[in-house]
Length: 173
Image (cartoon, helix red, strand yellow):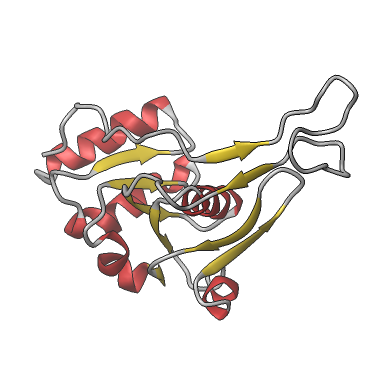
């Protein structure tokens, strides 16, 4: 059974933020873009093991962000089509934005036929598919969910959470 307890607490990510001075220059390195830069570091980051299921824009962004902040992230998707570019780069998502940038290393990156590997030994499972697809995804994940995993539906949907809870109880998961 899934419990209602809080997910494991993680320390805040270890990030260096370069703050502007009163004259617009930055303390430390000077940023030419005029935007405060955030350099995510992997050392001293939490070791929470996460599976993200859904590799659309939200899933890929969340996987990259968490990986850059030191989380151990696996990424799964219903189909392999969206995963091919990530797999072609050695399971790495390159982030190149004005604030966060870097190569985000992922663990297992696989389609639905390998959800068991995606969820193996994970503490937190984040489902990033549309609310209308949550039921079908949970059905596919049920054989691999364990009582100690925390499940997050993102995007959140109130009735999606009720439906997911009912589905988990019906399957004694």
